[in-house]
Amino acid sequence: MSRPASAWNLPRPYGARSLAVLLAVLVIGFFAGQRVEMGRMLSLTGEGVLAAVGLREQSQVLSGLGTIARSLFPPQISERTETARIEDFDRNRLPWFSHLETVEVREPKLNPQTLQMEEVVDTRELLVEPLGYLWHVAVKMLETFEIAIWATLLAIVLSVPLAWFSARNYTPNRAAYGLARGIVGMFRAVPELVSALFLVLAYGFGPIAGVLALALHSAGFLGKFYAEDIETADDKPQEALRAIGANKLKVMRFAVLPQVMPQFIAYTLYVLDRNVRMATVVGLVGAGGIGQELKGRYDMYNYAHVGTILIAIFLTVLVLDRLAARLRSRYA
Amino acid sequence: MLKFESVAMRYADGTQALGGVSLQVPAGQFCVVLGSSGAGKSTLLRMANGLVKPTQGTVQVEGVRIAADSLSRIRPRIGMIHQQFNLVLRSTVAQNVLAGALPAMPTWRALLGLFSDVARRKACKLVESVGLQEQHLLRRVSELSGGQQQRVGIARAFMLDPPLVLADEPVASLDPRTSHDVLALLRTQARERGTTVLCSLHQIDLACEFADRIVALRHGEVVFDGAPGAFDPKVFESIYGRAPAAAAPGRPAVHGIEPEAVLPLHTGVLELAP
Image (cartoon, rainbow over all chains, first blue to last red; front, side):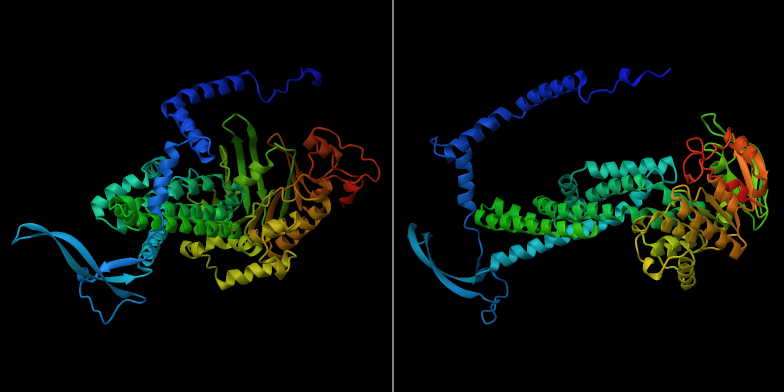
């Protein structure tokens, strides 16, 4: 027998259980925070803020940041190379906008006759390209971008079959489903940087390792998200095409793809955006692009060069972000 | 044309949807299936193209038994119109209608979207014949009204000139006037081609107007099978389990609502039958 509406029970949104969960989260957060030194982070940052507004003499954080800033700036723009070190140097055909410079370098040298240290004046000729290093960084940045684009293309190609087999409503059988899900999970589980480390061993230093490392990871990402969209696509139009005897590929093309296309474009743009950022990182382990240049300069203490590289990366990511946002709003 | 031989359907949860129904629909007939929700109308229709597999009995279309190995051959010869239209809302009218030709083309052409000129011309003609204009061709289906969407659904169903069309409550989500127009269209299209139609409906007045024959189901059993002229309040009671409400004079018929909730029988409907 149904009860009168006055006796019905419509549960409240929060109850004792929510309180317990909240408490548990707080306790776990507290202990986890202790282990990752959140307290020290707060006190150091606080000191930094106080020092910045002049309420404190010095702060470890601020002086550290100051050192970095001083060594990175001004960024390196020009390129100076000793002509003696340039192979097949032709002084009649200098690169565009470049000129030669002669500098006298005084160096203490051991005179073999007298066995005395003597100051020797050495004349060196330098090729100066005023925008040389900027140009070099731009070329490396373009290479990074190309790595990202090719990685994304390969990822799309790889992820399409993965998505097909790991979508429950299209996979031919459980074994294929399990295998595809396993591959997708594995691709996603291995970070780009780690797979790049191994791929550099296999393919040598350079962009191939970078492209493959990014492609594998993105293929896992795209495969998973494509598959989930395929699974949740409205089944009604699919049933309509199944009912008249269209095979799975045709149903996918005409009843699923048009539905999921905006999502697919959004994911793919996100992956491209992410790949550009990650392409700078995988370069650190020698997988080509601007990252490789960054690592080299960093190891040689050429912090001014590092400054230029960081600015280039920052600007590229900024521009790309705007571009992706515009593409997304148009197509997705 | 279409032959059900003592088909029964019992779902895994034990629900008996159909209990041994035998039915023959001759070629060219417009056969309407009536019955309240859960009476087995959809199950019966969906057995005709193998979307539902009967637990007992057999279904034959054009003398071919519906079975796993014959499905791919038979299905392209059976058009289907759905209650929720089952169109791709984001695709254009043209794409949705052309999709009706998919079973008859090679997969690689389908994947590239390369429909033959014959199919494209046919799609245009069908879009025109269901009462839409050229300007609708490249519109997204989501921009159309419900009635227009079902017209697209009908155009898609006739793309391959199927000898049999199944219409599963084709007007259940449309208003009364549009329901009438859409059913009239379906009837005309079928007449022109000599297509056999098996159509489930909730609106008795529409059934009486358009059907050559009415089959009524209750609890998975046929309780009435005859011409619309033979339909009377007694039959109504046998289908819906109660007498038609004495409709107030001038009260409009309410379509698309369960007969149990509002009995959609307005005065004069029964007299409408000759």
